[in-house]
Length: 520
Ligand code: FAD
Image (cartoon, rainbow, N blue to C red):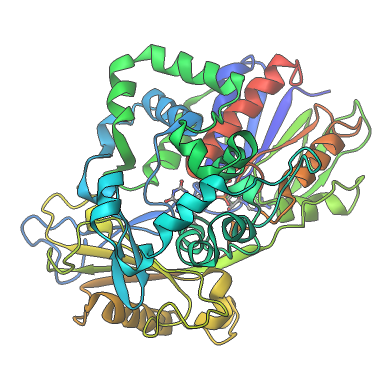
């Protein structure tokens, strides 16, 4: 058997898996990473525009940085600490941008409701002082929630349900549709009625299970969600550089001066300097043949084939399903969760004070079938608008722009684009739609100086109700003799979609495999 490990996919999950492998396996073990496209990073992509054309050469003009995918990371919890530790090890701390938790952009969160920006209270006292329309009735819902009988988890230990069903059961339809529906738009571009509570908003689930109520749980400090192992990793990382980690504890979000893509770019650079690592670009994997227990696995690509003793798939689960399906004992559930399409429109204006709000941006409530509608004037399918120049200042040193990102579609793709599938939608029409959104919601009528439209097909997996149970079954199937210590899976299809979760899960997987002797 060859001592060769194949990592499939060069998104943040595959790059992190290859990096942690390189730090943990002997130099005699070869690590080969396959990426199908021309660049690494997957959904993480940053572009600087306006560095040529009429603006070129103007004093101080360095163009405008646009994020096409993720724009900030939360440095909290196990994922946050592991991501920070990676950033430190890659010597990227000098290019970090940090937003303190006390900054207005971190404190001010908005929901567009009743055709107005509603400022969400950021603290207990502000909850009592200001009552935007969206908060009407929320205090009494919260008080009743504290006394509402919890679900009987003893008779239903998995106890999963949709995020919406949970929020409606505990707090009522207004909170479920407008507050929780908005939150789900912000993270998953998804429908709260479809998503698993347990796998997406675990803290709510845990608080009811342990304290009998979300509100009582929050008052008592909440349930610790980190596992023993994660706590160990957090402790070891923090011990290395206490000053850096304590400074980061006060941050709400972090980003990079040259955009989020700085992270995968540097990972690739570092991997390419390591002797036993090979990064193969533009080499799409077309087939994975497991063969028998004890044999090598054959990984076929457009350009040839290699044999590996272990394969780590960091591909979307449905892609792995296809690669495996032709020849092997099937793995369950890889094809179960749907993925949503999102249109991301980046806009930059040469007026730095165009938007009279100092906050992160706004989200919109769940609008499907709402009667009466939460908003009458927002174009259909609007998920939200990020105020990038507020949320992550410092990417244009001269700071002379307002940057906005309009997110459209997600689970409301058909409503947004009259049922036209993503492949047939015309980008210019999407740009017009985005300009309608900023006009209707923020009163911005002037044309942007720079604009970039990207249509992301199948970009965010939707963990459906019962995801946790299906993952357990998938895990059990991976322990069967054909797969055990031969194939592992990681990536945003399984245990969290955020970039920090992807990094943390890649590290946890590699450490578990090494500890179990699964790579020798
Ligand atoms: P992917 O990025 O999907 O990587 C998979 C890789 O595999 C790709 O590079 C692909 O080219 C490659 N590949 C596919 N098929 C093959 C094949 N057959 N052979 C070889 N290679 C193949 N997270 C945050 O934490 N903060 C945010 O602000 C945030 N905002 C987001 C905004 C948007 C619009 C999107 C789409 C996501 C956002 N996320 C955010 C989520 C986060 O960006 C993703 O979940 C994460 O980047 C996924 O990484 P991954 O490596 O698991 O998968």
